[in-house]
Amino acid sequence: MSTFSLDPGADQLAVRDWLHGFAADVMRPAAAEWDEREETPWPIIQEAAKIGIYSLDFYAQQYFDPSGVGIPIAMEELFWGDAGLGLAIVGTTLAAVAVLANGTDEQIGTWAPQMFGTPEDVKVAAFCSSEPDAGSDVSALRTRAVYDEAKDEWVINGTKTWATNGGIAAVHVVVATVDPALGARGQASFVVPPGTPGLSQGQKFKKHGIRASHTAEVVLDSVRVPGSCLLGGKEKLDERLARAREGTRKGSGKNAAMATFEASRPAVGAQAIGIARAAYEVALDYAKTRVQFGRPIIDNQGVAFTLADMKTRIDASRLLVWRASWMAANNQPFTSAEGSMSKLYAGETAKWVTAQAMQILGGNGFTREYPVERMHRDSAIYSIFEGTSEIQRLVIARTISGLPIR
Ligand SMILES: Cc1cc2nc3c(=O)[nH]c(=O)nc-3n(C[C@H](O)[C@H](O)[C@H](O)COP(=O)(O)OP(=O)(O)OC[C@H]3O[C@@H](n4cnc5c(N)ncnc54)[C@H](O)[C@@H]3O)c2cc1C
Image 1 (cartoon, protein in one colour):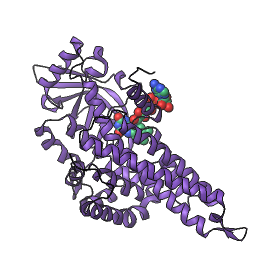
Image 2 (image 1 turned 180 degrees about the vertical axis):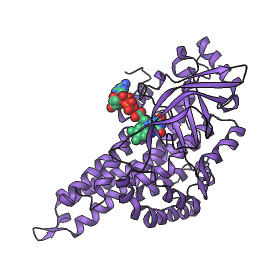
Image 3 (image 1 turned 60 degrees about the vertical axis):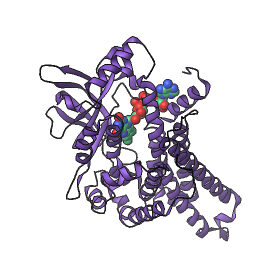
Image 4 (image 1 turned 45 degrees about the horizontal axis):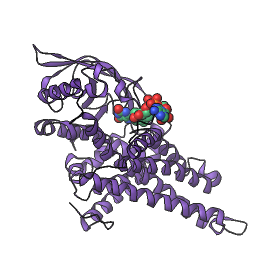
């Protein structure tokens, strides 16, 4: 087990500084423009690819960092730069992690590189789970995958929604039900390779925040994928389905899925921290320089104490995120749903901190002349995606009580 340390090593600090430079020099100057354009910022993704920030190697290196804090440090720095551009850059990792968590070595080797493309020809990937009638309730998925034994192909039909990079991705990872009677335990994940007929983009959503990140419906109309695109393989799926039909809980998919969520949620919490830290810094600077009643506004406890609370909540969020990330990297059991806890607290903190920052900037905070207005809009997604705040509380409450709280 790697020792937990709050003092990142020289390598991690070097990565942080490198990402900080990219966030400050490339992302920040471009953030307002891409927010207004509400389009995928391909040139920024390409710049990130050229220097290795948008690459499988980079994320794999951070993902397998034994201390666990490689990913949170990277996420915080990029999202400090800008959340919309940040999500455009890291959205692919959602799909990559699904393949890493569920795929065979061969599937990882085949699909993960195609998700990123090359610096000359960058690609993105999409993870498609949510559906119009299955958001928080993932067991209600209707997208159906049926096995065509004669051809060793899976035929997928359904409509996905809210997919980050949906329709513009080279590789889509689609969660579908293979046995609806089994609910979440009857589901499997499939890779839909680039250019597969039958997959198309539906509506692209116009959003309140993170507008540089593409979010759309994905329609799957008799999409046929080779048997080899079932993540984990057919043998493993058949074993899992047989166990689920027998009703045995031993080795059930439930705990595995739960552990995956607990491990991935801190990374999303770290993104929220990046936004909160950025807004806090703007507000602190502003409070020191804005003069009203003949003194800087920070001279008023009403303003200074707010800044004290902002900083305290940001640091508390980071401690929760780092703890959960360390636990995930070291296979510690999440006995209190510490991953969900970290995402809940960091997400709510980002919303609260950015709202306070707007207040401290007064009228300026409400305009697009200053970035806190955008940061506030961007932060709002952090109590919604990757499990809403209510769902995080549900998971924590069930975990600490052992009761089926509804
Ligand atoms: C910008 C964006 C990007 C996204 N990216 C992806 C992606 O890449 N891939 C993907 O698969 N999905 C993605 N999502 C989907 C996201 O994960 C869902 O929006 C989220 O899970 C909530 O589902 P819902 O929107 O259907 O809300 P609902 O589940 O309908 O919830 C509505 C409200 O009811 C509350 N609620 C529901 N059930 C309970 C309960 N049991 N107890 C208490 N409260 C409850 C919720 O907390 C929420 O406040 C994205 C969403 C957005 C907006």
